[in-house]
Figure 1 (cartoon, protein in one colour):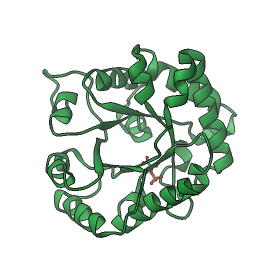
Figure 2: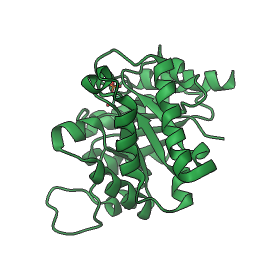
Figure 3: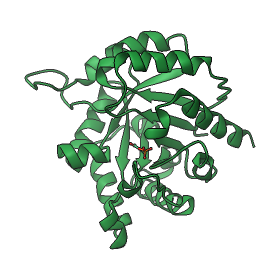
Figure 4: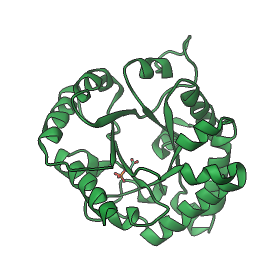
Length: 256
Ligand code: PEP
């Protein structure tokens, strides 16, 4: 049974005080949220303080990125050990903004995923085609390349089971134009089938999320699809009421 989840990716938004205020206001919201895992990914500088604040809540902490070495001369980078020590559980790897603006490659994503598991974190591997690739009918080819490169160094069955993959079509991120739920479901099925070919039945345990212009009004169109286990959300996760509404919507949809 895969637990549904909603992950908030705040990107380079919200100062430390904004982030603390978000948590205070979110905990005042009426979040039933039963059975839905709730994760927030603030900026690096807010992680440590939020880790203390979140102890009183059922929110979990994720990072937006990390480096693949434990320590060393890598000026400006953040190590998985540093994240683990302060209670971070999840780390987003291969977000399209990292790929596009910071040159992150499929191989980098693979190294990050491998190290994340080795250091006790769970990677959320993002894959997705851009608009041009979509128009050229290359969605499955792109997803296959990104995914299979990213998971090639994962050898432990326990890691395969905990892996999270987010299908995030680049053309849908931050545009207000989400993918059609039926199309997202087809790609999610394709991701699971690629993992099944590689890992067999264990692929059924992998959580696959959709991301790209998700909001409280459309989130359940995606999560109602049997192969989609939740959402990775940018803009609509920045307001406590909106994040709470998405969690409550998924919870209600799952309860039927
Ligand atoms: C994202 O950044 O992962 C994302 C899905 O953003 P948005 O929800 O704003 O499209």
